Image 1 (cartoon, one colour):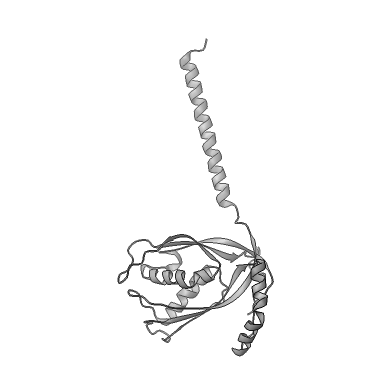
Image 2 (cartoon, one colour):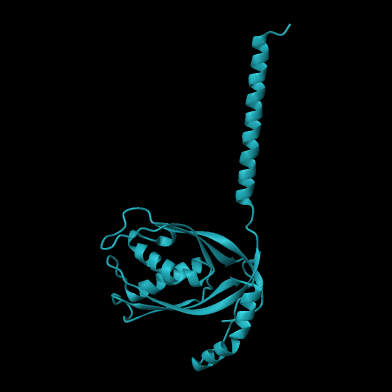
Length: 225
């Protein structure tokens, strides 16, 4: 004869078992989703000339240091490693007070019909500009796989320090909107005339080339140097 107490205990154990099973299923699903590769999109390279004036009330860089930091951040955000950065109004290791930062960058964009049409439409103008500079236009319309890579620009990542807050903020305002970068979380709070004491954070998704399985192979579609 089954008592009410015994039946209640079995029901409790069954409920606990079901809850444990449900938790494991949810955890497995979450882990599988996190480990799942980001979906690929077709992309092409686009070369741009960008510039901005860097002004800071708290941090002053030597010209070369400013160039290196901007170059490093752009490469982490999907740009080709041959990106060129030049800080004018200062030289070498001089401190840059109000430098004009000029950037020549080749980075992926989604190969949408509109992007392909725009690239073809402006081809002759870009070829002429390259000839005037004595350069060879390296832009390619060959398509290649890319994905939206999560990137966190916060203190500690990529050797960023509290004093870099204003640099990241100005890149966010003047450069990132012109690249294939989507801002996911913007917690930038640079304080004028003082170093940031909080944790400024900028979470983005950057369109990035899918690396070849063999690292020794060249990246498909990469412009010739």
